Length: 376
Ligand SMILES: Cc1cc2nc3c(=O)[nH]c(=O)nc-3n(C[C@H](O)[C@H](O)[C@H](O)COP(=O)(O)O)c2cc1C
Image 1 (cartoon, rainbow, N blue to C red):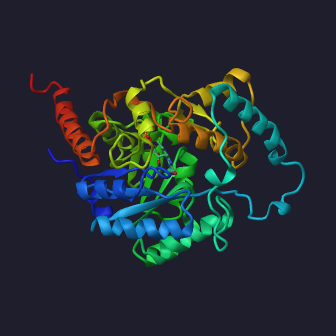
Image 2 (image 1 turned 45 degrees about the vertical axis):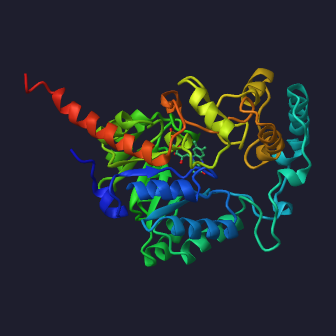
């Protein structure tokens, strides 16, 4: 038995297993390791400014000759670079109040506040501010100039860039969490749709993976679908294929790899967590995201304080997360992860994780034929 699907042909890979774009964590070393193992490594470039994005793409090309992808966000509505254009009261007014709340939390936890330059990203004069419309456009310009093999939008619709991407021969994917969004991106004529369910790490859908995959598959006709969210071992890969997916988009399983660009204390938090260890919280980015439950996420729940929307919550959480990182506090910033992390027992090389996903899926699929009972 040999894991194979149309996705392998489209992406020019050996096995239909794709490293999910995980902001910052899916770095060149990890993406290249997955591509070299026979899958598709995707850079988690959501927060990379144009200069860093170009460096990451070039670094990945140094590390692998095989296809790889780049994942960024394309939110439908974003603030413009100029705050003055916003009219009326905004959540920005509430930032000082929530910052006081965060400062009190830090005092209680004995976290040392850091000077702003320790956590604010250096803003190059010629680069647009993070997560503004101009920022996303500058990222797309680099992706097009660098002629990357695969582009994935983690949020939104790559439609407006489709003709330029196509002209470069770039294959295009989009991550969706609902059937209506799948239908919308399909109309842009992309190559592959990723259906990411509620089990998954990071920003995710209110719909569970098991229910979402077949409904997206049914809705998008002949466009291949990758299943995502909670797929953490070979049985999960096999299950996604059974549900009609033609491959998988795997995040958390690769977070506990030697190559992943997260802190060692965060890898340890993944290894120690159980299946109950995550919750969906707006306390870090302002959008609902599955995260390992921490003193920070629980503090907001206990005190019954409403986090601010994106991007304002980041102004509140940023200093706290930076202080926690400096202090090596996995109990405050363990990071985003999916519900499958209870299965992860050790930090390993990405190739070992990849090979086990393939082997486990092939075993599970061959076992499944016995379930029909025809042989008895
Ligand atoms: C640490 C982390 C960071 C993530 N960052 C992004 C991101 O920047 N862009 C994106 O499209 N998805 C992001 N995601 C979601 C993943 O792309 C993927 O859909 C998810 O990890 C799949 O679920 P799993 O973690 O259970 O495998 C992130 C997930 C994690 C765990």
